[in-house]
Image (cartoon, rainbow, N blue to C red; front, side):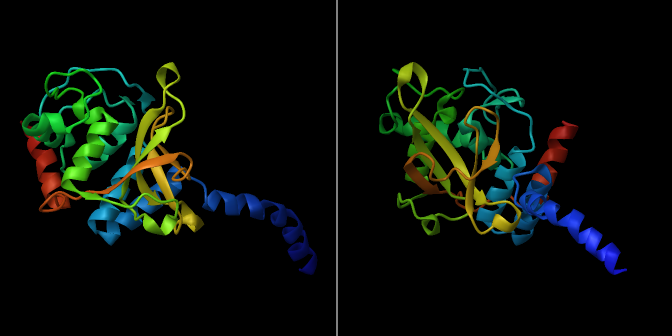
Length: 239
């Protein structure tokens, strides 16, 4: 018996670091566990973080191209997207259409939004997919929070914008993502869901780039309930 136990210890011991690493990896299995835990918590921030983590289970090719899409409720092809689309689709899972909200706000307040693109008026196809526009919307209608490099200053469900040191033509680029808990044993850590070129990823990248925006946004009246979302899906399916 002692020999069997000893042999088991000899063979299992080298696997322990691997097993521990798997428990803290950003895997699909750990994502599913985190999503269920966040949904059980049920508060708005946890629900948004769960919606963001669900994005990491989707196959998405990075694509910043302009698309003509329906309005409201329009989206580019589901297998394509960029950083802003992670945020847009996460909120939409909770019944919040940032395409419509940004467009309506820009229609009445166009000059209060960034004027980087030589636009003469709002464009519902692309405005909500531009990070600086999302920043302005969140700052106007949500909480515009402290910029810091201290993890405790960030909460699950916060939206963070960064300035990347790289982009088109050698220029710095805007980037955006949602704060979520880390995987497994690292769930007390603040990680992010973002798409920096390889599709939606669950990564320990909160402080990897210069933070230029920190927001907390839940629409007036809160997110749609699970029942309301189910009813909406059923209605669309039967139309």
